[in-house]
Every structure is written in C-alpha cells, then in structure tokens.
Image 1 (cartoon, rainbow, N blue to C red):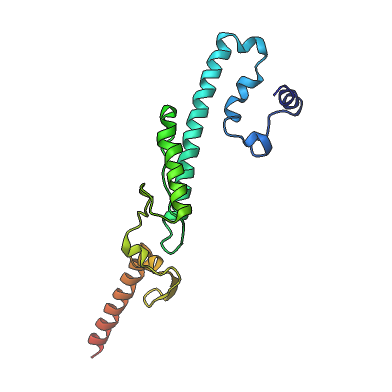
Image 2: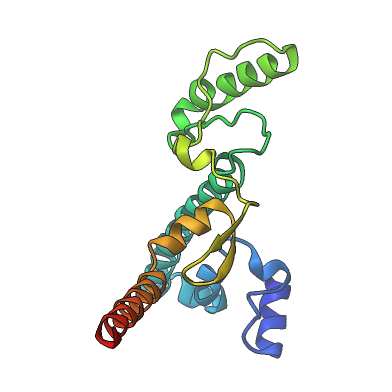
Length: 186
C-alpha cells in the first residue's frame, strides 16, 4: 500500500478503470489512504474512514444487485437456453454460514453430481408462458407500415406503437377521402 501511495502521489489521481484500481472498495478508500498517518488517527481521519466504509458497503450492495440481475437475465430469462439449475444461498448472516451456505451448497453439488433430485428448490424463470412461446427469429411484414420486423415480440410491440397507429390513421383518412372523392364524381 505504501508503494501504491507513493506512486499515486507522483502520477496524480489514479485511473479507476485499469488494473488494481478496479478492485471493489479501493476507490471508496482513496481519500482515506492518501491521508498522512498522523491525520488518520485524528477525528478527520476516523470520520473519513467511516464514510469510506459506508460507501464501500453501498458499492458492494450495488454490485451484488447487478450480479443477480445479470445472472437472472442471462440464464433465467432466455426461454430456449439450456442451463443447469440455479440456487440462491443467503450469505447475509455470517453466524448462519454453515447452515445457510456451506451445508446447502454441499447438498446441491452432491445431488448434481449424483444426478439425484435436490431437496432445495432452484430458481425458475419469471417470464410468462406466452412470451416464452414467441419466436425471436420469425419474419413479420406489416402491410400498413410496409416494414419487415424480425421476431414475434418486436412485431407485437410495433403493432402497439405510436408510429404504427399514426400510419394507420393517415392511411384510413386517405382511404376515406378517396371514397368521398369517388362519390362526389359519380
């Protein structure tokens, strides 16, 4: 840490997008780490340490939420993708680590290796069945807008879009005006 501090003083502020500076929690402690040792023991240093700890906890929670969202999106929300069962383990209370994490993980892994049913329930997709049945690669042609749209879901979105409704309204009014012109000329 001392070496890093000296290097940072020479080079200026670190680039938190490269190398060790990407480590979770390091940028939150940057101001505290840059304090001289005597200031770290003073009230200012202790307060800065508390703020840094709070910021790191908040960043860690944010990171965990992003990871959970990524796992669910990548593995559970794609209906046609074959993935192994995904289980949740509650790691929030360290005093319950053996029961809530270690022992459950052992049972889950053993059931997977042995090919036997697991006593714990895996996560399931929250995607509704009608959306799972949609073909993502189908070709749909909108006669009104004269557009080719790939995917059933995208086509359904297009049919409810303001652009589609606007084109439909314009074509209907043109048709009404054409019919009026025909009746007037007859």
